[in-house]
Length: 109
Length: 113
Image (tube, rainbow over all chains, first blue to last red; front, side):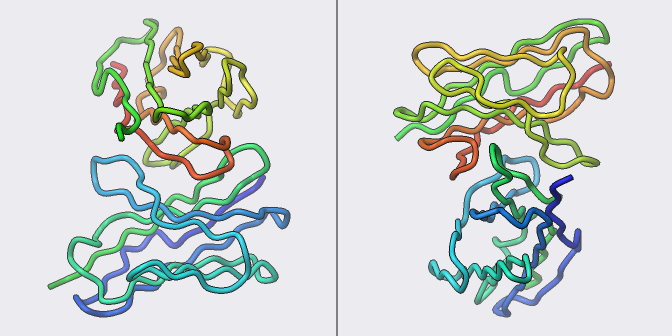
């Protein structure tokens, strides 16, 4: 069973802080990884994709990939209350994306 | 650029009935994937269609089926509905396929009574 594991949270951070979201995956051959944001009652929205070991930055978001440790993370700098949502990690399982159950992030003013 | 459009957005059915959900992908995207989302199981892959052909199928019973038309629009059908089929059904389109960047529609929320 190919699994993507995330801590369900909630992860609570104060406004302006860095939020760190983590994800581990079991399928060693996974090559592509994605972070989605899902607001309550809405559909998932793609934030970032990452394919190579290391960091990838896009605005306030940084995705980090460590294939040796089978670990993916998402850092959100200068967190805002509008970042409060569930963050889903996904890996490419071979023919589809395999999603974690998500981490709930709460940014408090 | 228009996004992924799903209809209907909400529907209520009773056990034993069937339901058909529709999805129009982003223009130029030929891959349409369907996912079921529930609080307990999260997002689970149902199937993917690409150029009118089912390319892959997840671990769901045969009551769940789909198709894709020549204009890339897709439909999924669930027959003989069960209470456990109550979920948010999400359609996602992609330029490259189900393993690439997916862009989701707003979903169809199905309640089975």
